[in-house]
Length: 196
Image (cartoon, rainbow, N blue to C red):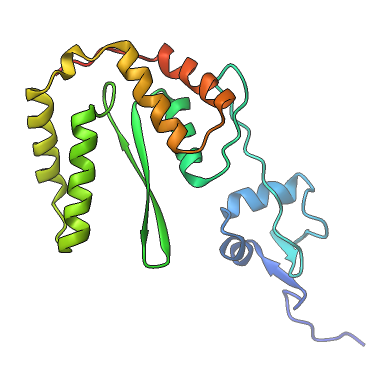
């Protein structure tokens, strides 16, 4: 006697449900199924079904590094900084907490990043926003930064100043001295004098 089981047994789940639960694209889960990397996954008709109790797989993302030695980030700020260095773009990264949520905010600069004056201005603006509760619009902030850069000696900033700025920044992100050496080597290779 045949039992009236549903098309998708209770102990299985679909690709879409897995993708939602694990926060992984369904296409990646399908690829894992096709590569036989999800134990118990099977095809039902033309659809993959996955055991409902299977644990989320560890997905290793392999990318070719542009660094001379491997540097492993230990937190989200380091992860963001490392991505910018790998991409060869000048940057600054900050961690902001709003309530219980932490945001990693990156600023990418066309040339060699913020001058000391701009960094001080950013800190002042952040303090003003914190104290008054008023947020300065991005356009207004960018205009202020442009005026400050135009009137500063940014165009005369030397390579040594540039590297010193990044050394200080990388230290504040908590990178080890050995990792900083590797990262500065990459940053130095991408150095371009600032042009307004």
